[in-house]
Image (tube, rainbow, N blue to C red):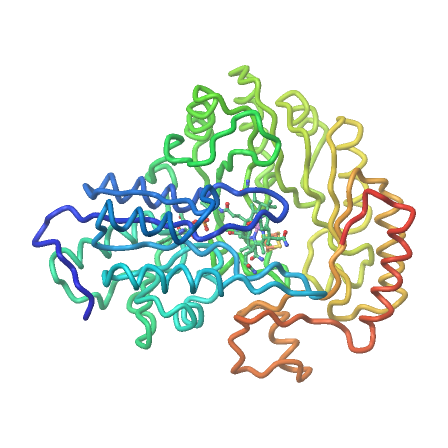
Length: 436
Ligand code: B12
Ligand code: SF4
């Protein structure tokens, strides 16, 4: 460690947390993960400040103010997005983060520590690119205070779980919190964007972490692991109630799959109904894991919209994607949700391994037949490290096994791109609720 650490043995440290995301794409996501890490760090006895750059007109000025007034001894930067996952005109978002880090460097020489969903997919390459000092892959509530503990006391950082040092790699095996209820809830007073009535954002609520489904293109395992870990429904409700008391009414369940396990999803809905919270919310579904009881509960709990990521309307492609549902289960899920009066946004990802003109046409016709409230169509699939898709791309010579994939590369079946663009454009013409 060659960075200046001012705290002496056991002394509380001043930690400035910066949420680097300023993207307005789709939604204004509040920095839930960073809030959780800040709360855990405060609970460990440190003095914390959270700066959400989404709420600032001038990022540099806000950072200057924060560093000059607070004089942090450590800076933690949350990196949510790497790119927009769009093959057409990909937007690489780390340059902005790099500028933020460079600006911090001009004002302070304290250690800069990275974390966040985007960072966790690229723990080594993003650290190199951003030239920060270190980073923590995955959840930060336990690992970040543990790191501060070692820094405070001058203990060697080797062995710190999930910690990467620039140029020196992983320092200790990553650990996942087994009991999520042991982690503190986010602090609603830490949000810096506060317009409770606004449609632009829903307060993010996380009820569980991890996804076992292992879709061939997905990066979630690197962020949250493959084992589902759940908070108790009582604590989830407490989290929501605190926000309701602060005036918030719209929520967004950020869990990868809200309807898994089914019994847990039902339990959550029942508790929302019982408490008469007067909230509305959205969530993300995995097709096929649904029954009439869940749909009735969702409707009674005022779930307004569900993202239904079926991604293809062709059985062979679903199999290649390692989806564990079939076309009839997608249709059945969609019909049940419509009967329950819940809006649905569908998702298609075209051009992946095995795609042909016929399978793509089949997918578009299938999506059309579902008559969804909205449809988002993506052409080409962003290749993430450690996925089956990345192995296919190596085998087919699209990327090399050495490629770190930080700069977005997309899988697209050779020669299909132009045709796909034209075909999707034609399909979209009479369908104003379809986007790409
Ligand atoms: C829910 C979600 C959405 C929702 C957001 C709803 C909302 N109100 O927030 C919607 C659907 C709107 C959305 C949109 C987009 N999303 Co999104 N989203 C997610 C998802 C599934 C969960 C994010 C979340 O809230 N997690 C819960 C919190 C608690 O976890 P966390 O932020 O990771 O924080 C933990 C750790 O990372 C760590 N940590 C966080 N910060 C810090 C800081 C430090 C210093 C440390 C030590 C640790 C640390 O500790 C935290 C607590 O344990 C993730 C995938 C995933 N599983 O993470 C993708 C994900 C973040 N999204 C992604 C993308 C690309 C997007 C879009 C750009 C897509 C698009 N083209 O529209 C937009 C961008 C929106 C924007 N304006 O920024 C990518 C980002 C990677 C990349 N390629 O850039 C992800 C990772 C999905 C993926 N492909 O793997 N998204
Ligand atoms: S269900 Fe969603 S989060 Fe889980 S592996 Fe598939 S794409 Fe990833």
